[in-house]
Length: 139
Image (cartoon, rainbow, N blue to C red; front, top):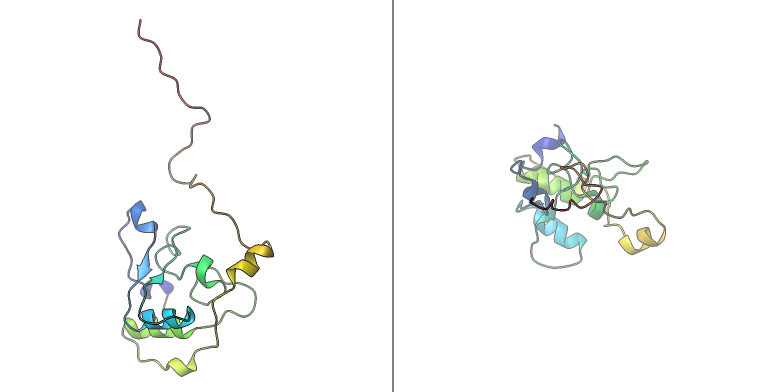
């Protein structure tokens, strides 16, 4: 099964990339457990890159090397209970206990080590003017 089957695609609207989330009833409590919280909370879905990554994978900036993020890292990409629960949400029979051990990355430690990248301007959407245009006086 490809990753596109995991998270229901959102509309092809640039606004849908602001903060897409997955609202699966089994996945949300697993996400909250990773946050050491209670209740339910929607799971952040990737909002960067193009088709095949954005809106269909877990958000790389939140989940780091988890297997269902859009980019495979070095060895050690665990299949978390969150991903297993999301498969249950789309109809698979699953065993949560078969998931790999996983914890959310410590983003402060990653930032201090220089491993996080600052968000860049969306230059791939539209165009940027090198100078601000000035109005031409009417004669």
